[in-house]
Image 1 (cartoon, rainbow, N blue to C red):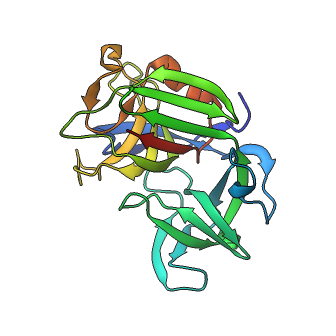
Image 2: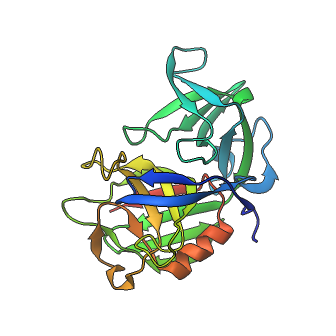
Length: 246
């Protein structure tokens, strides 16, 4: 497998809300980013192509409003679907990290203690261009994948914003509506607060109906071909930024 993509079979879990109820097997990335480990003072601002991934160590992580500030929330590790609790770092201060959170509302951030996470880095980014119906994966400054995408319908649009891949699941039926793999993102539908027993998580997944690629067809998730999602699953770590633009 390519760098940063060592994955291990974990436990059976049920994931709801990825445009429907998805029964899947989480594939947990033991090394949630490239082998380039991050030193304490490294910041994404020092390299615009670099992303810093923070993976939780304890069984739960307390999130604060600011360094030494009041408690904001507490998140379980692994998450509700058996995947390692993962954050995308936005800023570092001594002993603290400001991170993007996998919670509502979209774009929520908070601070976690540096001692509660392990850090790693990678150079992958995903960009979803809604009007063009394209999903583009960048590796450093080079296009790694550029592929047609199905997106949300007018009444269940795919929400714009910055998110990250928080989990990778393998549906039990590779010929089903979710295709071979499905990424759960840190974002949620803006119009569906619940769906099929879940909380409206937005995902990127394969499909058994390639005729929907390049169209507005989903409840908010992003669909790509099974060939594309296979390549992504074999290559990308967790914690890849996903920018969704109009």
